[in-house]
Image 1 (tube, protein in one colour):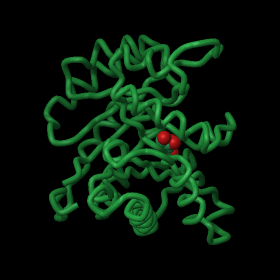
Image 2 (cartoon, rainbow, N blue to C red):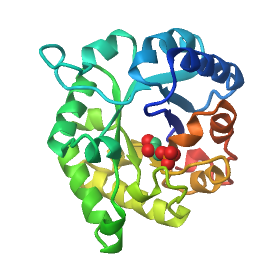
Image 3 (cartoon, rainbow, N blue to C red):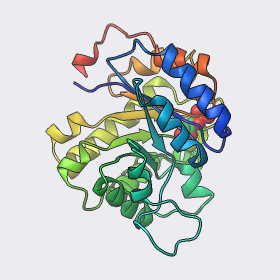
Length: 259
Ligand code: 13P
């Protein structure tokens, strides 16, 4: 059985004050959702303050990125040791905005994966194709290649702690969501890839989130897909009411026991 995981990636938004207010309100609003994981990803400046607010709630928190070395002369970077020090549970790695805008390579992402796991933080590894790649019929090749490189030398035990997020670039912040069937098909392909890299048992435990214009009005149908185990939400996670509605998605007849 895979526990659903709904996460809010705030990206470069919110001051400390707004982050703390949000976390407090969310904790009160969602205090009765025990059978799932709810994770928020505030900006670095607000992480410590948010950690203190969510400590006694069922909201987990994570970082949107990190460097792979524990300490040293890396001006401007934040280390896994520093994040572990404030009790970070999850870290988003390989987000397409970092790959595209900050030039992050699969080799760097792989080093970050290993570092996060070494410090007992769970990575949410993002993969996904660009629109041109999809139009050329290369979406699966692109995602396969990212998985093979980003997961290089990650053990089975580490893999089951890792969450994957399929985020097609053309669906991020555009209002265009992948159709539930297309998303499910890619998730099934991702799971097949994990079977080929590991084994069936490992793959059956790995949760795969969908990300890209997830909103309260499309979450039910996305979560009804057998291969979709959660959502990584950007824009719609910045407002308590809309994020709480997403977390309270309507369970379909397909129970999570069947997933
Ligand atoms: P949007 O939900 O704003 O499309 O962003 C998705 C995303 O990039 C989450 O990591």
